[in-house]
Image 1 (cartoon, rainbow, N blue to C red):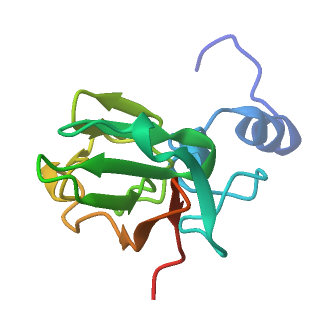
Image 2 (cartoon, rainbow, N blue to C red):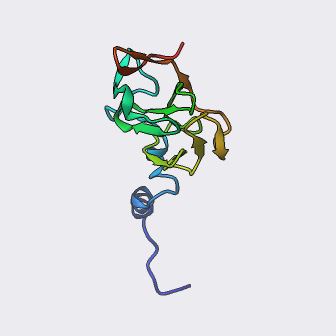
Length: 141
């Protein structure tokens, strides 16, 4: 037997309660209720002047969780930027690639398609149109 005293049951339980548990910090993997915009708009959203998105370009609207792209023919597409893997808002656009901060999923901002797992479902496409020279995204149906 060692010369160390045996800890009481209370000491063991208190130590266990204060010890960090693997997985505690994963709260960032869920959307939570932090006042952020919903995964898709709940009403039409004005994303600015039509000319702000040039042909072949994409624009990330972080506060609205939406990305808009314009094809070479001038047509627009919009997608929710909430990751389909764990619901994290995507705030990083690299060229035409959206990168999720939680687990590294990547999406094509022009098509919504998954470029890199763990996500395996494309981004939600949203209706988008130009009204009176403004880009308007509507709730998905």
